[in-house]
Image (spheres, rainbow over the protein chains, first blue to last red):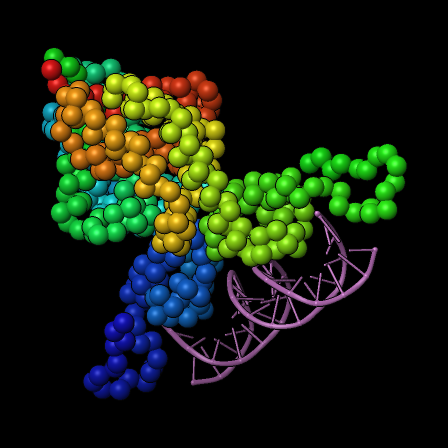
Length: 217
Length: 217
DNA sequence: GTCTATAATACGATAGAC
DNA sequence: GTCTATCGTATTATAGAC
């Protein structure tokens, strides 16, 4: 919560202690957490303001409305997820390798943003995917579907339904993080989000999925 | 929305048009839907009352508080899920068969209660699993874990981490339904909750999971 | 057992000062 | 660019009639 104070030559426009982009980013960060927890309807602008260290008036100044802020929040992970898969260059790898890489990257992404998955479940169940629809998820899933189709064509993967299987892969990659606050009560002694546990989860997921789609020789 | 009207001999206690148990059940049904959508905090008692066809006063009459109602709502699926797995008699089947049966049953359960899964995600993220902890989920997951351990002992399953894999199986069984309102926008032409599609999802899930855990000969 | 009415509070959004 | 103050509305929970 660093609040920069003016140094140097006192200018004659004394307020504006922070700059616009920084404040906007702080609001989006706080909003992401609040929207993930409560969805569009349940989120409290006051809670977002407090989390960002500003007042609610600032939210309306930068984003016009709660809905405007919500849209901005959803946009960030939608773009990031697409770009991440894009940058893996899955096309240039054998299907089996590509799938492994994608699964590892997806889980690592979830681990880095443990609450972001809930954003989309809230969106689905509270807003019927109205804003999800405006994203680029078709193209994002296409990355995985393409790998699965290629694997079948190459003969390294068995015959399967690429869309259904990509949903199931998504389920494997996300469940642990979305449900973590429940799961942790099942083994209270273990920190289930420690790097070791996440690596273990990742290894198990890769093994399950790869063995699950592989063509039997 | 059937509201029974008194027939026959006019008694001299004219109100109480419905009986207690029926009203209680109606409230829980409506509450389940509302809590699944919005969680404990975001749920509106007015919305629950409207959904149940009664007034908010009735909620407090039967359940004392919003929280009391919430507890009652969570209890039902927790018990049902446990009993369902119990009644499958998984112990008496070869591990591979048992796992297949459990997966089919789990997906069928989700399909029959498409919004119930969100109840638990809301609980995890909004209440940190405070009420989840009071349930019997340890024992419920134990059913699956036992099957996996037995499969390894029998040599039909490869070496794997039973708890991690059971989480991943849960992810496969639930994702499709929790995210359905988003997913449907990916293929707007298909009804992804039709019996045919659910059967297809089930088959793909069983194939993925069984192949994923099987010991290679 | 069920309703109406209402108290007390909390929320989203805006106006206006600085 | 940021804050304080506030309007109008919506929400949880209860009191009391029937």
